[in-house]
Length: 68
Image (cartoon, rainbow, N blue to C red):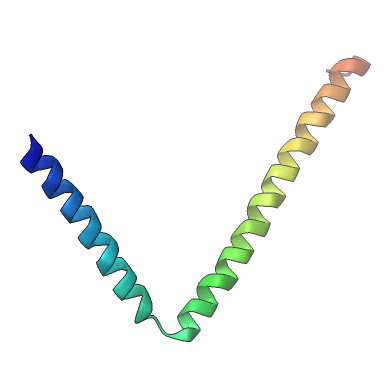
């Protein structure tokens, strides 16, 4: 059991090391594109959440006023 857990730890540590090395080789243009995509995705998620809150609020208002 100890051999399996230590091998798993070794694999995860080596995976992190390779991920760091792969990230260092990414060109600046790709890093910029990833940053822009992240900002766009954050904005889109915020818009979806805001729309859901508006729909929920309108349904609550409709229930209180007896429209629904």
